[in-house]
Image 1: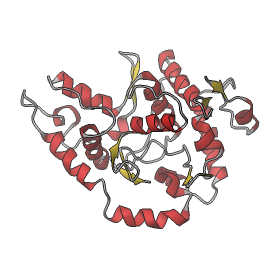
Image 2: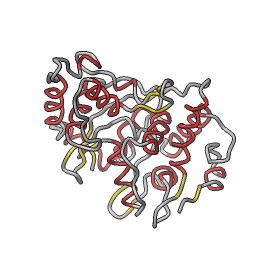
Image 3: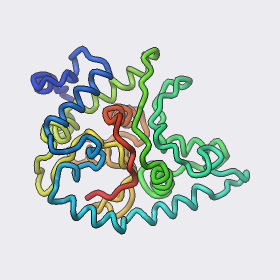
Image 4: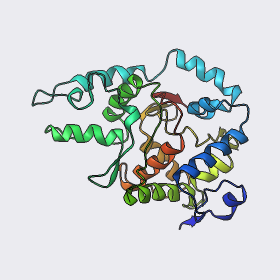
Length: 277
């Protein structure tokens, strides 16, 4: 069962509730302003660090972990995979350049196909175009390769574009936006419930992170997983947590959601891979 949040967000004056007439530019400005007002002691650029941008007591521990980050092995493995030759003699470097420093280009709107393309999809499409099998979407080699590519892309600005002259792009954005604000599952939660309205609150032993900056740090090594994972793996985990059936990784539902949440973080820097609890 899906229930769309309308009144609550509208009364907060965000101007981004479903049914409120606003475009992506207005949505983004109101979205970012909400978090900057809710967490006035957090510099805007620091929202790229997730929950550690608003939780000083956990930040010191996180920074100590980052001195010897658990994703270093993933970066090393990813570098090897990135430069490994396909059967035809080419490699991922032939698609994305010598270091794969292209994180700032994704997710992007493919006008020819009328769909959102994530970096993970682009990697597997490169492999398939060269006669290779695609990697799995959520973890393993895809997370290692994108960890290497993201590491080499650190500091690139998030600047997702939603072409104003393509109604299909706007529809994809609106679909991701609806997903973010729609309640679902047995617990009847929306993404916005945890990561907007109650961002910074405790749920059991965990503090919920702000959605502003959610898409900047992937792939991530989570202590809970004891492994690397992609953003779509996390989306699926959130659905499981609220007892909702997850969607297929890299399907339109999660790709459009990524399009929306990444656009909401325009202006921040990509800083993946990262370590998270």
